[in-house]
Length: 214
Image 1 (spheres, rainbow, N blue to C red):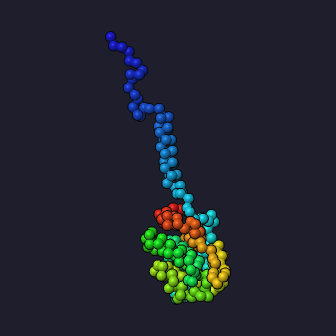
Image 2 (image 1 turned 60 degrees about the vertical axis):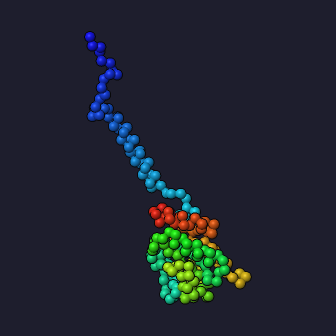
Image 3 (image 1 turned 180 degrees about the vertical axis):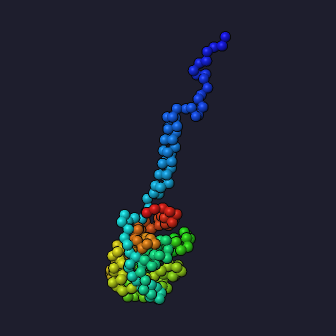
């Protein structure tokens, strides 16, 4: 005589007959995983070494005489030539910080090797000495595509204030802020790197050029 079939021996219900709550749970799990994955993809990367401006400053209207021919240009026109422009304030006769910083920036551009995506512009804080021809020869000595910008004392002073740069004559030389600024293609000041954070500049720029949002 056959034993009665126990509940545990019964075949499981086919998928199309399973309770609706099972499908609901599966859908919730799937949606949750998708949301988590999306959040991971959209989340910003590690914190950048530079100081990122929460409210980007528009600096594109600042006007200069471009080296070496002295053509009048705006910083916005220079910024449009690349995705990102590094702006440094210095002067040709600077004995130490300027050549060291310009060399570092040249190494960064060469290491990243992104063609026209990255540009460097040096604004002189000694416009009376650094005419377009002199400044042009100086910046091209570090990299053939570096841009030199000079102008009147008022041009330089106005630009320096907008970039939070200070400078003055002291003991026969010019003392100035040694930071490097990052300007986007729209002519907006987005971040500032002091000398202490410059060693991380190449790493940060690589992340930014690869899509890291500021």
